[in-house]
Length: 147
Image 1 (cartoon, helix red, strand yellow):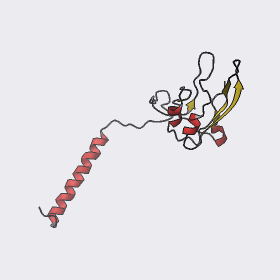
Image 2 (cartoon, rainbow, N blue to C red):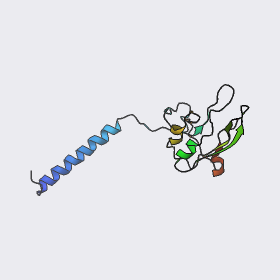
Image 3 (cartoon, helix red, strand yellow):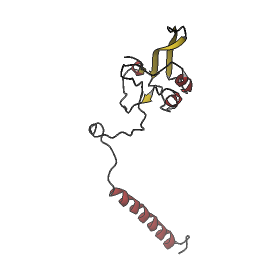
Image 4 (cartoon, rainbow, N blue to C red):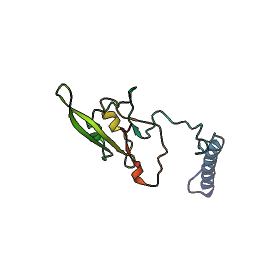
């Protein structure tokens, strides 16, 4: 079977056609993996490792673990996190930094997870929420330490 001959080219074309048809038929009989969103909202499975948006977990008294160390703000590559803190004097006379406002711009977050990894007190985490569509971008700037 020569490549230059008419018959050789015809047989090679038929062989490649059958290879393509074999692949198409294999995919044709597979179970579809497409999710029909939003109709399947009740049975939708989201992985635990999915990075939705940041939240600050609270303890039983409703207190956050954030100590306003600014490590997450420094770790953020595009300035999504803005921490406002103030220094207060404790009863023992020591100065302590207290978190006033923790702002998070969901619209510019790239979901890299560097802020969560940088936090030494596990004060911020990602949740599994994924529906973030809004008509006004200003609604994507969230204050996480609101009670």
